[in-house]
Amino acid sequence: MSPRHLATHLVVLPCLLPLNGAPAAADAVPDCPAVFQELTGVATYYAADGTGNCSFDAELTPLVAAVAAPDWNGSAQCGRCLRVWGPDGVVDVRVVDQCPECPAGHLDLSAEAFEIIADPPAGIVPVAFRSIECPVASPLTVRQKEGSNVWWLALQVRDHRYAIASVEIRQDGLPTWTTMVRQDYNYFLVTASGSGIDFPVDLRVTDIHGHVVQNDDVLGLVTPGLVTPLDAQLPRCAGIFLDGFETGTLAPHWTLTTP
Image 1 (cartoon, one colour):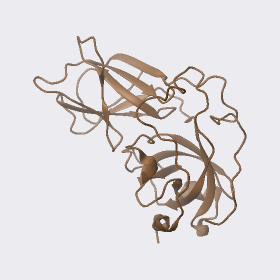
Image 2 (cartoon, helix red, strand yellow; image 1 turned 90 degrees about the horizontal axis):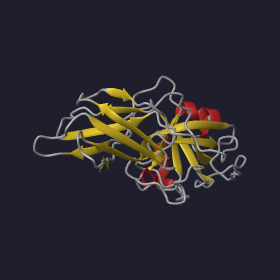
Image 3 (cartoon, one colour; image 1 turned 120 degrees about the vertical axis):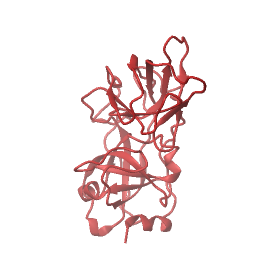
Image 4 (cartoon, one colour; image 1 turned 60 degrees about the horizontal axis):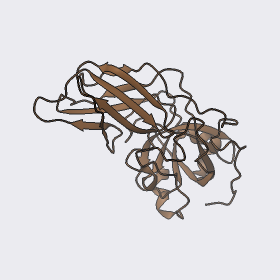
């Protein structure tokens, strides 16, 4: 029996703080003051391979998670990294999917991640979790979705340090930026009429902390499936992290009460 089926029997717990597609006013400053509180909930596991509603590629050893549907927020959680504490240990995971049956605060971990924090036969365990910096060592990359053309262009940001708030493009010869619309499958979409989008286009990516990476003439033409590296990675938050936690505190406390 899939552990996801247990979700309908759980009490609703505190959810992930929402992302609404734009940086919060208190968050959009260079030092990235803490905005993520300590959260408690429960975790189950499933046969994850890194794919899912976030439209990422499969991984050989997936330390990943699916967030509950109430926490999904239109794919805004995709690519966010979480540190999860369980009865037997702690594990860092990346959000790659949603769990439609799970109530708020429920994490559905990959089997590989769950066995680090708990005994798999337990099936469901209490956990605490926080958002953390993703361990990226390379620049951002951008993928053009299959089916993209000069009238319908969908882009996905990959390899990002923090969750993405917005993606904008500026067409060749134009002075203004166009905000792409986030899709539930973790792509940002822009459409055009007439002769379509004028390439090359500039790209501007903003994370939830207000950090911006801008590349001019980064996409020279439409090439569905192409992954393009950008020139930089989103900056780290300065002077706020202790042990990688955005709240600057030690590991959270969590209850051993059986859910």
